[in-house]
Length: 316
Image (cartoon, rainbow, N blue to C red; front, side):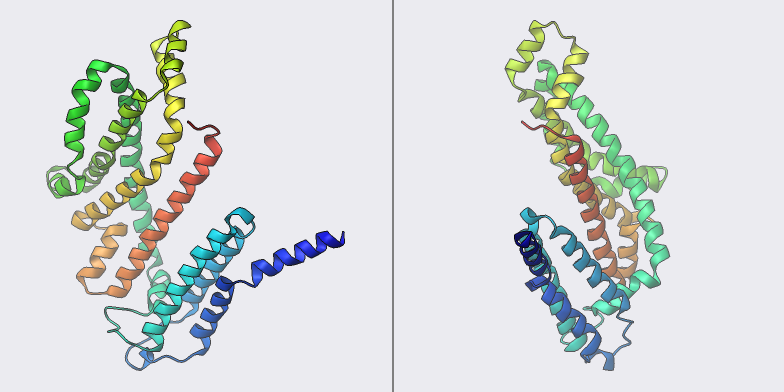
C-alpha cells in the first residue's frame, strides 16, 4: 500500500513539476503582472482571451501526461509552444521591438476570436461544407476507380501514365480558371478540392492494388471467389490501413486548395477572412485567421487518428 502511494505521489509530482508547467506559470505572470512598452504606442486588448488560450494549452498538456508512453513527446511539444508564446509576448507586448502593425501582440490577436467570433464561426462551417463535399467525393471515386483500374492490367497500363501526368499539375494553378468558368463559387470550390486530391488518391490505389500479396489473390481464385467479393472483401480491407494513413496528407492538401480558392472569389470562409484582413492591412486579424486554420487542421488530424485507432485493427 505504501509503495502504491509513493508511486502515485511521484507520478503527480512529475505531472506538475516539469519545465512546460513552469513555463506556463511564468507566461501567466509575464502577461498579467509585467508591464509592457507597446501599450504606450497602441491600444492593447484585454489579455483574458490570451490567458484562456494558454490555460487550454496547459490542460491539453496535462491530459496527454496521463499516458506515460507519450509523456516525453507531450513535454517536448508543449515546451516548444510555450517557448514561442513567451518569446512572442516579450518581443511584442513587453519590449515592442517590431512595428506593432506588422507584428501584433498576442493579446490583440487572441482578442479577435472574441470580437469576430460570429464571422469566424460562419466562415468555418462554410469552409467545412465545401471541404467535406469535395474531399469525400474525391475519396470515394479515387478509391473505387483506383481499385477497378489497378485490378485490370490493361486499364492499369494505359490509364496510370495519363493520371501520373495530370497529377503533376497542382489544382491551385488552374483553380482561378475553374472559379471563373463554373456557374457558382460553391461548385467551383468543390471541383477544385476534388481535383486537388483525386489524382493522388487514384494513383495510390492503383499502386496498392498491385502490391497485394499474390498468395492471397491466388488462394481466393482457387476458392472461386467472385470479382466483386475479391475487390471489396479482400483487396479493399487489405489497402484500408494505408488509405486512412494517407488521409492526413490528403486532407492537408484539400484545406490548402480550399483556402486558395476562397482567397480568389469567396465572400465568406476561412481563406476569405485571411484575404480580407490582408487587403485592409489588418495583420492582427490575419494572424488570428492563420492560427485558426492551423487549429482546424490539427483538430481534423486528431479526428483521423481517432478514426484510425477505432476502425483499423490490422496492418500490412
